[in-house]
Image (cartoon, rainbow, N blue to C red; front, top):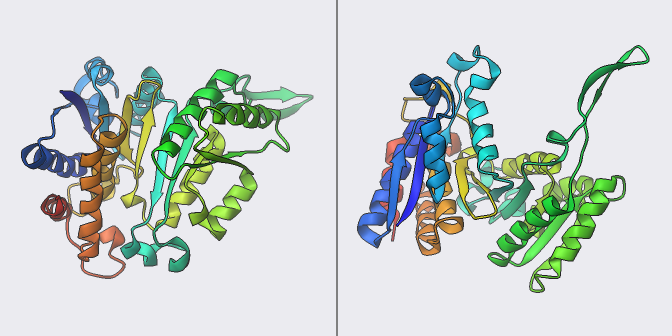
Length: 355
């Protein structure tokens, strides 16, 4: 039996995770899902329970699980803690400890929500992009880095660096995702300016020979940003470096109108994944039954698809979410002036729509 570790976390995290677990229960009861779940303290809740955001017991459980589902971390009550004790450091520590180098950020737009996008509905209706971002290398981690005085002038510097093995493994991850989707992959770089991007393009092209069914294209990052706004549906899967992926994935997310709808995954080379909504802990609305649980529920679907070998169950969840939206059900963040239902009501509606 597969094991799913659940980290409710802070703010609205426990609320949205609770609704996600009702979906798990329904899949177990009605569709014979064989999945063992256990909950553990993490983030601010980890600090409250054990004095650090990633307790040893939580890390051990995550390392032994097939997948990890997280709600959200953070809150104003933790902002004055030493940096290493803040909830967000627990998330960085978990990703690092499990070597989760491949970040999958889908930008999906259900047709019923096309009017919520900042772009014209005819440009974004049916949008379904997957951005694969390298998560543990590049300029965020490269050295040397720092701030120093040079010739009497304070100067900041960072180093963008990628090795061939780092590029190879993120390329293989992206090609595998493309094989499971539309078999089109666009690699985004800045090879006309950066030597590190020259190597990136060379290695991605070489790895592409192992995936002859996938149509590989290359695009400079500035053009990619423009194309996401001009004609986003031209893309299926995009793969890029840590820095470029950070920017492009947030850009793509806003095309959907609400980050309350978007899941994400961080995977290691064994397919072990951390799955979480893109949105934050939203402490200002915590405990009010107004948070949107759909991103967490869709994160469960990603876990079932990419780490737990249950693609059919993932399909059920995604169809159910589409059905409740087609019924006109909305939480406050996607209501656009219409009547809104609460967190628990949305969770119950998804359970009812499973088929």
